[in-house]
Amino acid sequence: MKIAFIGLGNMGSPMAHNLLKSGHSVTVYDLSQRAVQLMTDAGAKSASSPRAAVSDAECVITMLPASAHVRSVLEGPEGVLAGIQPGVTIIDSSTIDPASVREFASLANARGNTFVDAPVSGGTGGAAAGTLTFMVGGNSAVVAKVRPVLEAMGKNIVHCGDVGTGQVAKICNNLVLGITMAGVSEAMALGVALGIDPKTLGGIMNTSTGRCWSSDTYNPYPGVIDTAPASKGYAGGFGTDLMLKDLGLATDAARSVSQPVFMGETAQKLYQTSSQNGNGRLDFSAVIKLYQLEALANVS
Ligand code: NAD
Image (cartoon, rainbow, N blue to C red; front, side, top):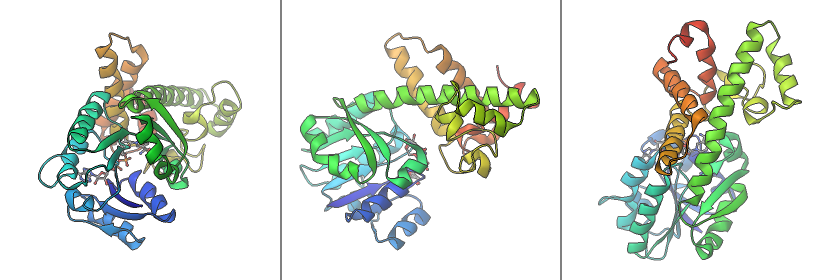
């Protein structure tokens, strides 16, 4: 299938590689020339704008930081909607708010196109291994049509309901993730301050009831999990600013239905402080740096 892929960051790049590996013809677009070059070296075609990238595409995938980026790629004279053929489905895998998704779906529908939200879980490791979970919102027939494309990048493809419900699932999952990472950070920092070896404590947690993805895959304490961002200077992985964005999506969505998010709001403050301390582009597990005494003074 001819696929246009827009947004070649930590997630988009390995996802697009997996489409190539599955035999799809992939045309890419990104603001970063380096990211584009790495994909063309691997066999993709490049385009000079989103509009040019989608001109003969049978499916379009966007994997961008936030709603404003998706809007700028879709709209305008050089945008996706200006160049897409009728009947083609747009799959947005970015994590954005459900209300924007519904608006983008209406814009696509008005031009004779279909739209599904398909945010992912599984991190950069899952993106590279092709084992992502896709949480998909959209019409059943459209979801069935795009399923083989998603299967080239993921292992679990879950149809959550109408357009927007994929994002509902995603922001609730990341609400848990933001809270558990802050919790594991707090416990690891406390344990070390009280004198236990971090690897021993991490090992105990991971065979006990404290075990979770934040402890057994992305443990925030350096050296506990060799493959975790914490053991590589917090590079790569899932950026602090992206987690901050997702907690903002969760707390905003909660407000829209008068639902309390006690722990989500506390977690949001922690990642906000971590970002203000200059860690916005580091993996979100760098939140553990707040538990150094001098940084704790910044938490309100
Ligand atoms: P990233 O910041 O690494 O990559 C974003 C890419 O989009 C960059 O290459 C950037 O150049 C490109 N871009 C931005 N604006 C653009 C534009 N107008 N036109 C073309 N390209 C543009 O982000 P990421 O980590 O790949 O995350 C992408 C999305 O996936 C986010 O919504 C994030 O919340 C979500 N997500 C990330 C992870 C993770 O572990 N990193 C996991 C699950 C979901």
